[in-house]
Image (cartoon, rainbow, N blue to C red; front, side, top):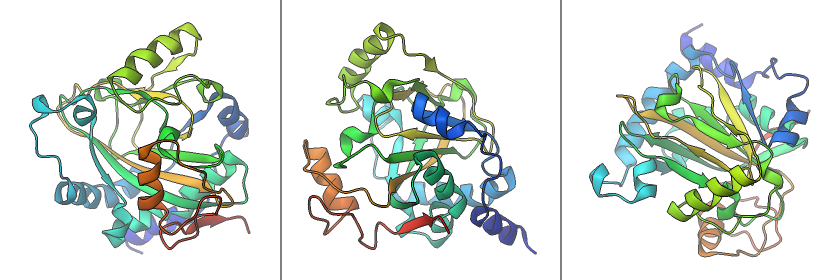
Amino acid sequence: MTTTDISVDELETPYDDLPPTATADFNRDGFVHLSGVLTPETIAQYEPTITSEVIRLNTQDLPLAERDTYGKAFLQVTNLWRQNEKVKELVFARRLAGIAAQLLGVHAVRLYHDQALYKEPSGGITPWHADQYYWPLSSDRCVTLWLPLQETPVEMGPLAFARGSHNFAFGRDLPISDESEAQLQNAVAEQHFEDVVEPFALGDASFHRGWTFHHAGPNRGTEPRRVMTVIYLDADLRTTEPTNRNQTADLANWMPGTDIGQVPESALNPILYAAS
């Protein structure tokens, strides 16, 4: 059996190291950081392809110094699974989707979309924000996988979370920006939410809820901070009326043909895991 075969087998087998308290921790804290979700060998099979696709598809051509705060935070390429069959293997991994379903406490999850997020050397902060500001979804039964493709010490800017902030309504109308950074930084401090900043070993991954406030520091390292993310939805989750232009765009881009109040069942939103 080849290394590639072993990697594919790992992606399709359950993750057996989910702590007994993981779902309760996830519900209480709004996120969970898991160790050894994938082996370094498996990540090594996919990182070069993801990186080459990011280089090929990236449309950001401004020098770092000339970009705004959002542009300095990372290079962002979405729905790589539609561009490359190798990347699709990772995005469609039953192991990863199974963790998402267990944490959400649902019988099945479907794909919303994927995002490669590459923070360049000397790249800036990722401002405080909540992902679900961008998503026209009827509930918070959604979760983002954050999978670093290299060991990620604190100086490279790992994702950090405000523990328990998914139950906090303030700031949900703020897009990622200098304004969200200033307002949410103050709110997190005033509400005494713990700012959980931890390094990620190679193979670690985090999962966070749509309304969990999070951020990342700058990349002070000499190599890009390479990350693959996948957003999963409860398979029964329905769309809702967009409340901003970003949600309108997401509805059109990630759930084409889905009317308000419908379950997004297009070919772009396949079910990735269903309990047997």
